Length: 343
Image (cartoon, rainbow, N blue to C red):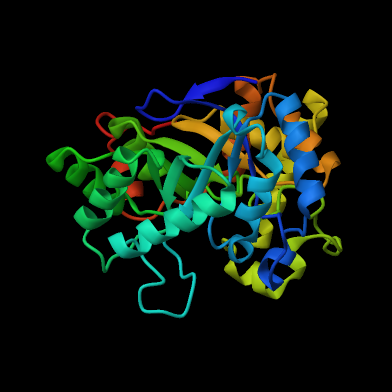
């Protein structure tokens, strides 16, 4: 599997990683994603390693820590062969300090994650969301201390806006603290907002994109089409899961799916494979997180690598998925001489 540099770091990562949100199914929200048990998790890891995918992503809130625990069991005895990323910031308990990116919460969250993962270090530790209450200097100094202690190798963030990320990077540079090398961000053919500001920032500052929900919250699997009911296995059937996902107008989804159908017929690939391959052609993208409840789904996702869309096919998908930019981005794109599109 192709390896790429993660941002402006020396770490090389495979272009695909396996997300563990499907591990455990510890509550209604995550049951809509999947309920993979320990045996199933180990089998999926086996399939990944055989294909050259050795990067696994989790978070402390995935099924209340159960996903991390199952991942730890699945990689036990072969920790040296894998890369593990996990995340903290969101609420993990009822206490006043059981949330956020304070030094108190991050140190305790990291220690708990290490125990669940059955490891003494985390390869990529990411802030799951921006904490506007805690000073960024406190967050970054806590992360820097974890790096210096050998408990974390690299740090990243997730779901930050452009100014959140730039403020953090500036503080790291000012005080000589560990710098975010990755931004785990939502990006898909039905959600291209990442290109407006975060992609140019990533190009300028050397922050690699780790893409979550690359199939648009299950909309680009090929199972959602005009005039057809939702498949029984779709997370879109769960009101809890559906309401928390990125909003997309149905007609826009159908327009993109129509274009995917055309390109899939030309390439002999499936819709998800085409959608994933499109992402792998985009600037700053270092890694795309794929999810799978079954071996069949995992192997289909693995089929997104080892080939490339043609420029004409990329243009077809670009045109079908384009939307009117929000201000000030539409205004900036009118000054193409000095504000060119990052793609």
